Image (tube, rainbow, N blue to C red; front, side, top):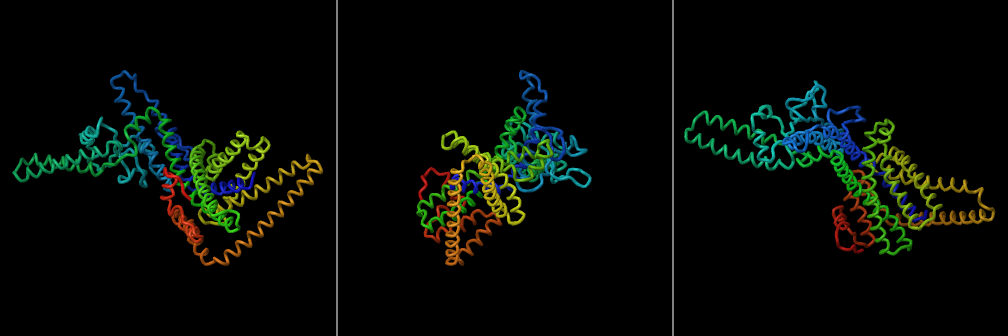
Length: 513
């Protein structure tokens, strides 16, 4: 590979190395949606009472049946429960904790629990804890009809036991408005009866009705699922699950893109500052290169986290114990990044930029390099137990060493087929390349030494701020630190925080350097 392309590949390997946390959390969230669809949690060794796929097979008669829609809505209520639990568990995984929410049907001894449909906590006896449990009710053809149904005698046991009631997200506001009107009206009626000596029995009945409305209003909880989503989950569970997985993967991509832009941009900034200092680049060209590298790093990081989360989730719930074990490593992120890298090589081949031999060589080197990078990322994180930094350093070292190793092996395999004269020529070129590398390294060391001697205090403080931002995951802090370097060289930063960066990249205005 050419030097510039190899630099980008090394950077890409490093970006894959730091994606482990995002891929792990969001991959676990993807797994929860796959479990909701299949009804089987291979990681926990558990088969759920109901999965979306199973519910979609329930009999509901012929579409011409007058009760067809009613039966569909009733079955969609089960799908809503499964989907609500999946979405809650996914958020718990994304937050970095162990998913706890479950349907009470999946709690031993609580199938068809009389009060609760979902819970996130059970006591020492295995019973759902009231304040952490709730009943789900997807009833009524409208918010007003739902409110009427929830206040009917059929639901008295939930009111009397102070049970939280989870209602469709698209009905929640309407039901709250209906209850608010009822409560206001009942208060006026009670006040009138009290002031005018009304019938004591009528007054008592109104007070009981008010208490009922206030209790329901207090316990009303907005579901993560709408009526339309519940119906879709009942009728097309695979599509419904795919949508949730894509949403989770997209969030993973956006989160990692922010970190990738900060780190990729920072690495590019350092490289280009050195190039400007040595007179190899103008300030304008360097600034353009930094912007391009930052955008490229953000794009790759998005693709790595998006693809890595999906791959990780599938591996985590695989029936194969080996794949489940591998899912705990950062391999899913490297698989996604390797696909990106090899895709660029194949594109170059099909566009005629490289020939077949070069294509195979690059594919081999990138595959070998990414594998070693994954290994060294793990070693680096253990050796340097600082979030991101260890994996970043390990990935870069691993890729660099593996690239050298691969080229040596490739050359050794080809030596016996090279004619003597050709071999002498190649050896000469290699020696010249080695001499140039040594010279470059010497120049670079002198330049860096001189530069840091002159600017030691400034850079010591700035890099401390950047390191602190790394440790705390403070992207804006990282950008602020790198911007100090930019300003130190007399340039105005393009953006001062992640929000401004997103506005620039997403805006319609042309980028001005």
